[in-house]
Structure formats: C-alpha cells, structure tokens
Image 1 (cartoon, rainbow, N blue to C red):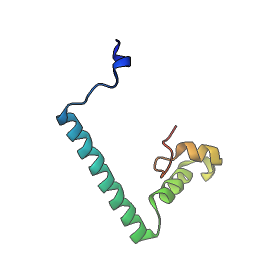
Image 2 (tube, one colour):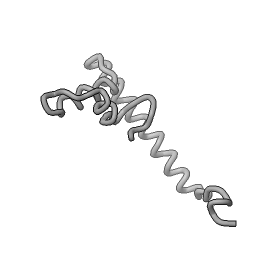
Image 3 (cartoon, helix red, strand yellow):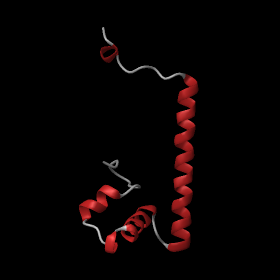
Image 4 (spheres, one colour):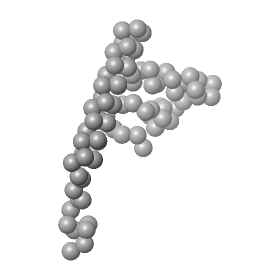
Length: 80
C-alpha cells in the first residue's frame, strides 16, 4: 500500500501544539485588530481591507471581481 492509500501522515504532538498555538495567537491578534478598528473608526477588518485595496489601486478603482481576488481578510472563502 502506498502512502497516499494509507491516509495522512500523523503529526507529532510538539508540531501539533505549535500549530495550535499559532492559530490561537492569530485569532487573538485578528480579534484585537477588529476591536480597535471598530472602537476607533467604526470599521470592520473586512471594510478596512476593501478601503486599503481601493486606496492602492490605480485611480482608486477596481472591478468587483478584482477586488474580491485581492482581499486578504474575509469571513468566507479563502483567497484564490
């Protein structure tokens, strides 16, 4: 049986712990950024991301499809 047939390789406990810590830290940072933006400017992180992309775009204009591909932070699908 090949490795593809035997299923995914098990991750060792130390590596799993490191990934878990990274994800938890990322979540905390994103939550703090979101809260600061909301408190200070009334913006969500997603709204800020849109405004930032438009600011950097030529003539501050993008097609909706271009904007959707450019966004870093979303609550749904992962970036392409």
